[in-house]
Length: 90
Image 1 (spheres, rainbow, N blue to C red):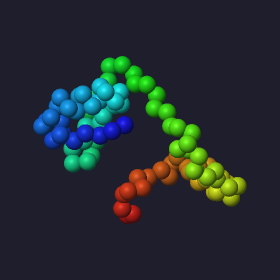
Image 2 (cartoon, one colour):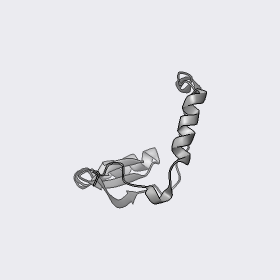
Image 3 (cartoon, rainbow, N blue to C red):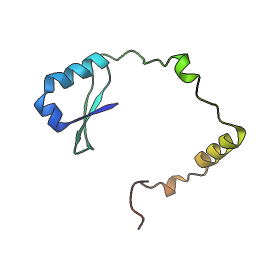
C-alpha cells in the first residue's frame, strides 16, 4: 500500500485520487510520516500485480542453515513478549 501525506492531498487531491484509481492500490493518509487511520481505497479491486520470472531468477534460495535459523526466529516468538522494535529500551 502506498502512502500520501495530508499536504499532498490538500494541495492536489485530484492527482492523488487519480493515482489511486489508476493503480487500483489503496493509499494510506499520513501526517508527518505517521498513519492517520484514513485510507483512500478504490471502489473496484485492482488486478493482481505479477512479478516476471526473469526478475525472480537472480534470487538465491536459502540454504538449510539459513532456513533453520529463520524457522527458529519464527517459532521462538512468545506472544506475551511482543514489543515495538523501534521503541527505546526501558
